[in-house]
Amino acid sequence: FSRLGKPFISPSPSLSPDIVVPPQHVKWLLGQPSSVLAQRPALWEGMAIRYMFPSADPAAEFVPALVKRHMSPAGVDGMQADMYRELRRWTDAGLGTDTERWAEIALFDTLGTIMKRVGQRLYFGAELGSSDELGRVLQKLANWSGLGGLVIGQFSPAVFRRPLGWLFRIPLGYYTRAFKRIWEPAVRAQLEAGQLSGDGSATAGAVEALAGTKRHTVESISSNFMIMPGTLALLLNLITQRGAEARAFMPLLRHEVDTVFSQPTAWTDSGTFTARKMPLATAFARESMRYSPLAASIPVRAVVAPGGVLLPDGTTHVPRGARLACPAEAMTRDERFVPRPHVFDPFRFLEVDDDDEGGRRYRLKADSDIVDVSESFLFFGFGRHAW
Image 1: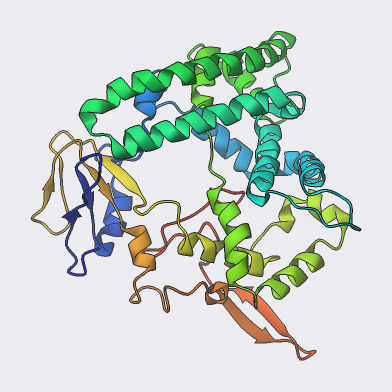
Image 2: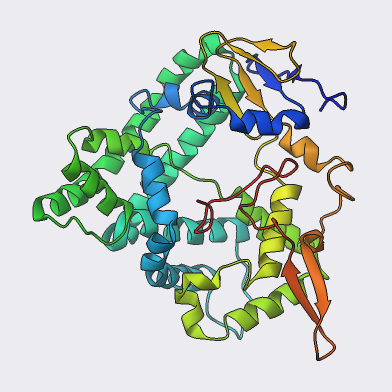
């Protein structure tokens, strides 16, 4: 990015008017109201959601409210035990339980299956969480929507996006109908039975939304679920690649995990998964996010003000429809912001003290949790402490 502190146009295969602002403008970018710079229109365009799922409403609050509900402390606590059982079930199935013989596994695919199945239980409840057919349909939807987001949103000029969206809607429509055939009966059954408390899953949340207001329909909520396929890249990258680069760190991390989870009840208590109790794991995850980010430019905002917007430099006017982004990845590669930026070093987020027994005690540095954001660290995750 520009070391002169000036914004510049970022060339892209899609020929979109993307403008990268310098680090000095980060606070300004994040502080603008949604009537001037909006996040969702930028995501809808960049991920091609508006072309693949035209019925999805970027202003709808159902999905954000649902995510907040699940990721809140109360939501996580209520499902922690069930999530642990699913995690153990699919870990045993994928990695095996035979400790006497060696076995060869496809690590990337196996870990992906484990995490997807745990997520399926989280969002769709106990009954549908174990459905192999639902898992297959969701995977197909994730594959096609991910491919469409890449081809349409990132590599296609604007003039080709709508026709390509029509093409991608053929397979997406097929699997969306398959998804609705599986999911809608569960929603309608709970709705007719008046089970509004549900089991904490997204299916129960949909039932509450349908019962509480006429604005929501099964079709609109089904469409909203199609925009939620997450990525496993960050966690899989952390486990499969970054672990090999931090060999000196791994014994310490293993010791922390063994200590924290020495009691079986620790797995079912969401309070266990905190930076205070697991500083090494938190530092390892944060460094992995810095070293291998999911996107080069985060956050992205679309200019929605009718008259455009004037950047803080006082001379650059950006018209309505353009997108603004921060050079988040480039900032993590700049020695002005990160010491030894090309070295994977989880210790950079830790402070070390000597304990009374001659050993070392680690604690996380201030503002270094996974969800903490700064002007030089704009990657964050969703979790019980993210809201």
